[in-house]
Length: 71
Image (cartoon, rainbow, N blue to C red; front, side):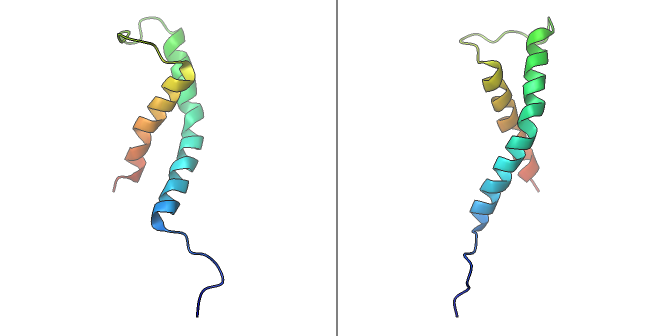
């Protein structure tokens, strides 16, 4: 007998969790990116084109989130 509701695959559940965590952590990294720009002498400037503050915050969030899925 088929179930009356659709089951959600594990991959889809992980994708939803990833988006929730990204949405929750992005504002924190956005503040960090703003502070990084405002405070002088924080890290060396990388060669090449510079990302926007929003792009930098997204990159920081995307590099940190996989650690939440380890273990």
